[in-house]
Length: 98
Image 1 (tube, one colour):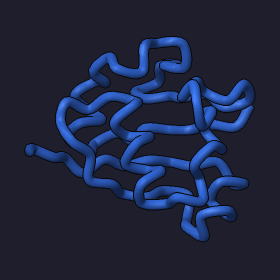
Image 2 (cartoon, rainbow, N blue to C red):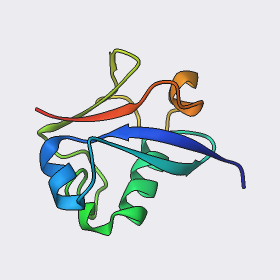
Image 3 (tube, rainbow, N blue to C red):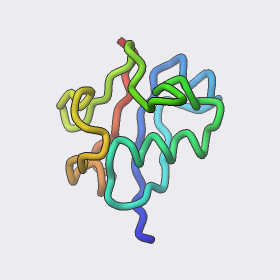
C-alpha cells in the first residue's frame, strides 16, 4: 500500500483534546481524500473519534469546516481526491472550527 505524509492543522479545542500542537503529520493511504485523512487522524488520535464527524454516519460536524489550498472543501464528497499540494505535503489540510 502506498502512503503519503500529510499535514493537518487542527482547531485549538481539538489540539487540547489530542494534546498536540496546531499541526500534525500523518501517513495516509493513497489516494488522498478527506475521508482517508480523517480515518488516519482518528486512528492515531482515538480521542478525536466523534469530534470531527459523527460516529455512525461519518458526516462532518456542523461547526467544523475543511479547507485546503485556499478552498472550502466542506461540502465536497469526502471520497473525492484532494489537490496535489495536499498529497505532496506542501499545503496542509485544515480543519477549522466555525
